[in-house]
Each structure stands twice: as structure tokens, then as C-alpha cells.
Length: 182
Image (cartoon, rainbow, N blue to C red; front, side):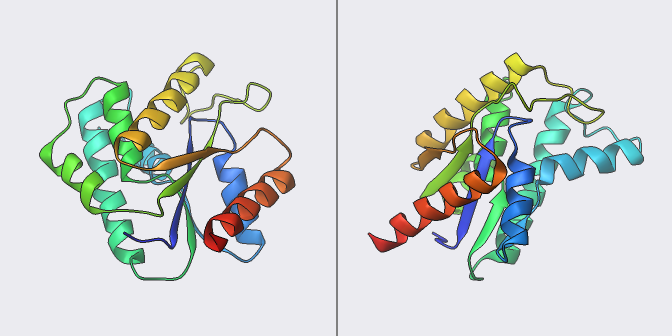
């Protein structure tokens, strides 16, 4: 288990990227979302690994990149990461793909801090764009699936309340301080 890798997750459009960027601006090590970067890359290259084109290829590409990121960061100092291998399992369940043995093994083997921060859907900030095609109802379903998947693999989740980003940063850091103090 790697207690220094702190997962920030949630459905699409919940403010994860903004929170991660604010944590980086506060001096913390962070890692951006792999899924969004993968979508952007596939759009530029006219690739097939897109969630609306080939869900299995998209899932497997995300898993490969999440494993590589974990291996790169393992043993390093505290780092907030946007999503994890558990998110890949949640995506797989959400779109009714069978879990591969590689995915199950990754979720069991690549362990993050036992507490993950989940950002619930927030209608006031939700926006679709060229890479985020899900509607708000799917964002809600994604959040529920994330809660279920993180619990299934033994993680405790803390919901980060909708609030201005400075308050969200304060909330996450306060919760993290409480976790490390106990």
C-alpha cells in the first residue's frame, strides 16, 4: 500500500481538475487525469480508444497508463492524483464491460492511501465539451459507481462538498491532517 498517493476522484465535471490545480498551486505534488489526456490524444490522432468509439480499448489504455503512473510514483512523497486504477474498474462496471484478470489484479495489487476523496456531481458547474460527452445523469451514475467500486476494493471515501475551490482545498487538507494525526 502506498499511503502517499492520495486519490481525488468523482464523476465528470465535478471540479476534480480545478481542485488538483489548486493543490498544485499550494505547493503539493499532483498528477492530472489520465482519461482526459487519453481522450485528447485519441482525438488528435483520430484513434479508436475513445469511450464513444471503443469502450474496451479505452478502458485497457486507461489501465495501462494508470499502472505505469502508479509504478512511477510508488515510494515518492505525498502526491494528489486525479483518479486511479479503481476508477478504471468503476468505468468498466458502468459501461458493462467484463473485468479482465489484469484489471482485477491491478485493483488488488496497486494500493493507494486507504482514504480517497470523491467529488459529487455539482449541477452548477457541470459542462459538457468536446471530450466530456456525458450528460449530468451519467455523471451522477458515475459517482455512485465510483463509491461502490472504491468500497468494493476496501477504500474509505470522503465526499468533498460543493464549495469554492479554496474551501475544497481547505477541506481536503483538513481531512488529510486528521487522518495522519490518528
